[in-house]
Length: 428
Image (cartoon, rainbow, N blue to C red):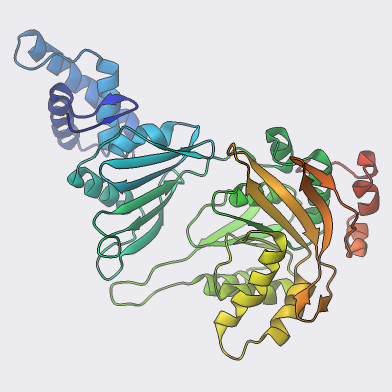
């Protein structure tokens, strides 16, 4: 036995022999297990029937749990081998491998060291299989790779000598537990009062920035906010790799592209944002702002196209500071004299997310930006704050009330708790 996982032994002698028979049968019948796993399972069971006949004659070891054996062989042929059990588990959000003997998972926000033990060959073969469908490459000249797997999972791999000895593999599943703000309310991440306010912000066309640490639920919040976008709006999304699952009718998703072996053909996030503005967007959504593309985002938002985006930050105010800094990476001619007032006039709402000690994701604060700066600092107004473990209404009000009025929304009534003063939105 070379390793174990939650489905039991991986490489006992009987399963190894059965896997070899199944591979031969799949190859003979010209079946692609990845594209047609149902047909592959039928062939595995056909191989199992032949195997059991041989086992009855004493020619091969008896397999006690045939259903488990079929699952493991199918995982090996059509899935991700020993990791497939974790990808199938709805409670597991991420799987990462530090070394063949160190496989971790994140379950409900907390990390666990699993019992799975791989070989170097297994790990290399798994990574090659994952990358095969993405069309992205991994070699000494390109030791990092970001890719999207067929099931929608996001893959990141780093290889030696960037890492010390072993490949470092991360597979983020993006378990979609919320497609609307109401779903976040039901999950306890957001209060109904705050959800109604955010729903009104999106419907009124305000620009919303979602901030938080890694795994704080930024992508989930972005998808939930998109659930409040009017059905008639055309949405263009820009991402490094496809992660967003916009619940919109008219949506065009765009993703970046790595350079070829000759160093040509690269498509950056900055390029995507520029191209998105030529595609008649009613809304533009940026999966994550990391670098100089923040300048193009600000230009887009300042041109009147409502937008949503995420950013890594420890608070709402730090998110604004970061947005004031990142555009300067675009070139030496971009200064804070331009960026700071542009951020103040372009960003309307910042939603900051966090993770509690028990792994629960929650909204920590919601602030609005009144459009003013003082000594190079963007002013903010608190709308909701988390105190004593619950999100409470603060004293502030948003500045863009005329935009709410044009959308037929009474934001003052909403914030004062008069729920029926607003029409019920898509997200609520």
